Length: 82
Ligand code: SF4
Image (cartoon, rainbow, N blue to C red; front, side, top):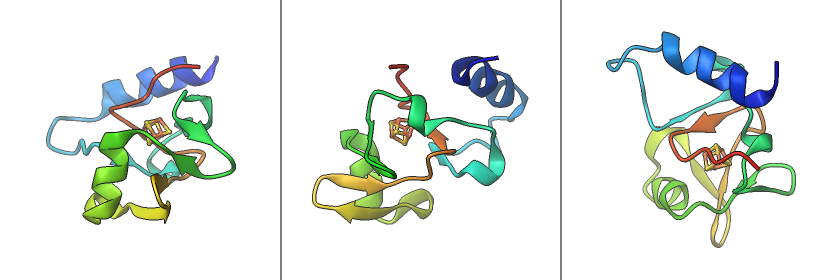
């Protein structure tokens, strides 16, 4: 099973009430590191996720200017398969 299939399986089990735009690996298995927006060891440059990090939403923080600090095993609604 690839990262995309794993993500879809887990997402399908999450109810709307429990769902949040970004989820850490502890709620996975997810695969930020299979996403087009992932770089380095923990950086996401998706504008929406960076905006969440600036506003400290969903437990996100900035890694550096223009990058949110994400868990390689996390995921978000902005996932885009590489
Ligand atoms: S899945 Fe979401 S948080 Fe993770 S790298 Fe992709 S856009 Fe960023």
